[in-house]
Each structure stands twice: as C-alpha cells, then as structure tokens.
Length: 479
Image 1 (spheres, helix red, strand yellow):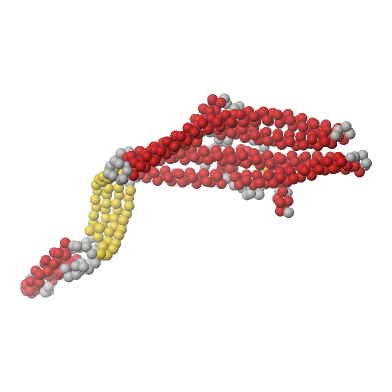
Image 2 (spheres, one colour):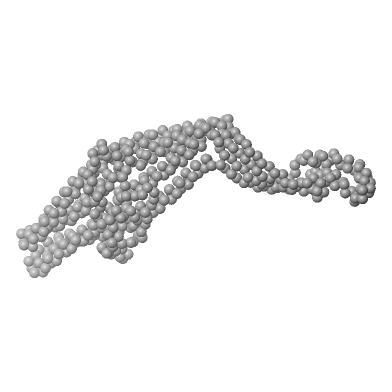
C-alpha cells in the first residue's frame, strides 16, 4: 500500500515548474551539500595559508609566574658576618642615643635587619615574575622567504582544488540529471503505450462479444498489456529514486516535486568538436588536475629546501622586559633601611641558533619529500596519458551521439507511421494482431531511444567541455 502511494506521486510532476539543466547546475554549485563542503575546504585552506605566513611576523608572548621556595642569598652571609659586630656595638649605640636625645636602639635598624636575615636561613620566601618577550627572525638562509612562497603556492592549490571539485560536481550532476530525465520520460512512454494497448484490447473485447473476433487474439493482446504494468511500476520506481537523489544534490527536500526540461545545453551542443590535436592541446594547457600536480610538486620542493636549510644557522632579534621577583618578606626594619623594591629586568640583542647535529633527522625528512616529488612526477606523466585516452574517447562519443540522434529521429518517424498503418490494417481485417503488437513495441523502443540519444548528445557535449578544463556554465572563481 505504501509503495502504491509513492508511485502515485510521479504523475504529479507535470504540475511542477520545469528546471533546465543550466538552472540545475547553478543550484547544485551554490545550494547543494557539495557546494557547502567546497566552501568549508576553502576556509580551511585559507587558514592554513595564514599559518604558513606567520613565520614573517614577530613572535610576542607574555609570561607570569609565582611560587614559594628557598635559594641562597648573598645578603644571608652578610647578615651572619655582621651579627656579632651588631651585638658588640649595641651598648655604644645606646649611649650615643642617650647623648643625642634619640630613642635607644633606633640606630640599630639596619643591623637588626641583617640579624633577621641570619635568624632563619631555611625559611621559604614568595617570589613573583611577569613580563613580555619577543623575537623576530632576521636571517634564516631562505627559510622565511621559502615559507612565504609556499603560502602563495598553497593559495593557488586551493583555487585549483575548487575548480576540480566543481568539475566533479558538474559531471556527477549531469549523470543524475540524465538518469532522472530518462526515467521520467520512460514513465510517460510506457503510459502512452499502455493506453494504446488498452484501446486494442477494448476493440477485441467488443469484437469477441459481437461474435466477429478471435478469443486467442484477445488473450494475446491482454497478455502483452499485462506485461507492461510491471515495466510501468519499475519506471516509476526508477524515476522516484533518481529524482530523490537529484534533489539531494540540489540541497532540496527528497520528496520535492521537480520536472526536468530535457532541452539540455543548446549553446554547448551547438559547438562543433575541435580537431584531436587542438582538443589535446587545450586539455594539457587548461586541465586543473594537471596544474594541481605541478603546484603540489613545487610545494614539495620548497619543503625539501627548508629541511636542507635547517642545518644552517638562524639569526634573530630578541627582547625582553619584566619583573623577576616581587617584594620578598625581609622584615619591616630591613625594608626601611634598605629601600627594598621590585627587581626589574630588560634586554635587547641578537640570538644565533644552529642545529649542529640531529641524528640526520632533517636529511631523512628531505629524502622522504624528494621521494614524494618523484611520485608526483610519475602521477603527472600517467595523468597526461590518461588525458590523451579521454580526449580520444570523448571525440568518439560525440561522433557516436550525433549519429545515434540522427538515426533515432528517423527511426521514431518510421516507427510511428508503421504503428498507425498496422493499426489501420488490423481494424480493416487485412493485418495480423502480431504485426500490430510488434509495431507497438517498436514504437515504444524508438521513443525511448530518441530520449536516450538526446541525453547522450548533451552528455557528450558536456564531456568535451570538461575534458578541456571548461565549466558547463559561467562560474565565479570562488564558491
């Protein structure tokens, strides 16, 4: 019951607005899921370019730390050395204080602070550090300029990858569009054949009821008619499945009604195919996949250059400013006497870094990358040979499609006339039912062949454009 209700959806396609192949291609490349994936890949690649270019910018970082601990201090030993001296002059200091009117013991503040330092040398102290440090590469034996060149190469690779993905989307959509159009046209062809066969069966039923017809002919006509119903169900199933797949590619709801305009790509189909040498030259010059391998090879060669340069020194400018320690608990007396404050630091200078030996790590990586370059060269040469084969194939396909379309146009006219004559002869009694049934089947096959030939001509014209690196419709460079 559910299958039957689904099949009833197919005849309702006639009410939908027809979609041309050009409109479908544009929608697939702007609204479909593949278009969204292309945009995401472009965003990711652009961020990768930014990451590579960061080598030309200075590196700036801030730092802050705090903790508790113990470390040796020069003042600790000094406090211990002056401890006895402080005690020995204590009485004298008291007498001086009495003579000048000051409070006794006031002048012992500095010595008391030193005494505090030596009272508990193992007591931990708190320290705090914070600041900013920066570095800028000055001379790297070409590593920075090579990295910037790699960023530009990666940007070109991204553009070529977009064109490759778009070409694939166009080819895949064209295949789905052709399959959907053929399946839907087949539904109409089988329905028209069933209608004609139903008229024949009705005519024989009336003849048999009047005693003028043959019951054997009636049974034969009914048998042929019943054999068409499974074909109709299969055609509706194929049409529904193909349209759902097409809707997915368009980013639409799976069950959305969609009628296809089978006009194809008239402007593209009207172009005469170029000569083999010209088409091969255009393919070699414009194919994005060939350019992609060239750029990938350039990128790998730049990586080899960087690996080799890693054995050469790097010269950079470095700077730092901050506080290495905050106030340390030394006692209030020592703070007053010693004017204790935070310890600031800053520095500016040149830094030289040289990788003297790394266990041949960089040279091993360079060797691996050189092997990858060689693999890309092999792949490119193989792709060139594949392009030659593809050029020959699309040229032969276009020639065969033109011939098939011309034959189908002649065949459909002859099959329609033969069906009409066979029907007239049968109704007049001079023709056999088998001839009429054969003519009906021949007409049905001729109609299918004509639809298939028109779609194949569109496909072959599109293949000629794609093989030479041309889009089927006008597209912007970025998605």
